[in-house]
Length: 488
Ligand SMILES: [Zn+2]
Image 1: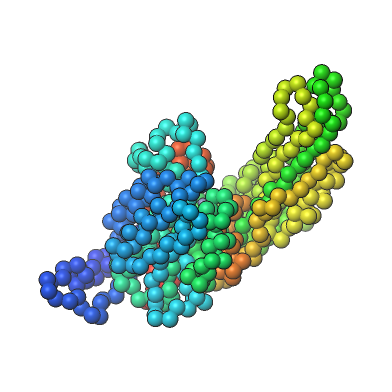
Image 2: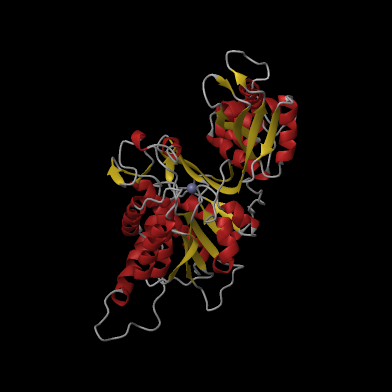
């Protein structure tokens, strides 16, 4: 990768470090440190910092924060201790027994101005594991073949450690900040509960109020060994669960009944699964496709460019959707049947059968409209569709015109040798929706260059992060905070 600009900065920093070191570390016994400390930039050779942060990542993986029950407080305390060593006060924000978030702040002046502040966000909890399917201890942070294995290595303890590194780098450089920078570790992201960000915001908003946030949610996408593009999440789809209930008469299984609830449920689920919602272009999705079109092969590129045309748009959407399931999900509302429940024993026809549909709506589309369509398709008086109470909320998109978005684009392009940086609407949900609902311009990255294979392991077996990718992610986060929060 071309890194000539970085090399120059590295040289500069080595020089300035040489000057600064006697002041920074060698204190003469009995003498107070100089009262006006030198300020510097956190930019430079971050390899030592990345190695240190790799240790934090390993320790965080070893603290099992599987949600439920979460037990995030243990990880929050671990981070508080690291910050304390750096001379940064951290505060645990209790949410539920054993479940705390953590916040720490580097101030730019005595008076905090939330209308400028930047939040570095990552979550402490992880999803569960199917231990038998892992080839290593999921909570062992095992280093192997250049990777660090473990639950949360990518989602989201990697970013947690990288955010922490960038935050600590600002402090160590004694950087002159142009805004407050707030480090926030959230709880219960992987499953809503009383410890989730909604509760965190309602209880502790004054401690975390900010105008800008960087969180998980995007990608540094690697193909054929090269970073292909950086996708910055600025919007996300809305998750809604729907219960499909089929009712019928119960009876002895030896005498089949036409109104068998299981049969009616299966027919309904099959019809629903065959439904394809219509394409709806959001601004962000349009910009995403414009950005990645030149990176695709000629055929796909041609169809991407035809997506937004009246004559060929429909066919183009079909080709694009068939070629990539994620693209399909970016273009329309989607429905995945995920759970089935019926019956008590083999020889009894049950009176009720249920299925759960996990629906992902494009922002702006409503579940009422979609259910209207589905009811028409199912067309069965024995079957009812009901929205479950845990539905996500649609948040406004983050703007692509903010200085912070521009800083993310600049830092990413610098870090990855000028690759395209495109806005992204994730099909998955993150804590950012709640932040956006509170007027925070929140953006998503996972700052590590990852292949599709490694991305797939998030929430799957043998989750892992390449050690080199982690170091690049640390470098990117340092670059980003330096770009946006340090006065030059
Ligand atoms: Zn996550």
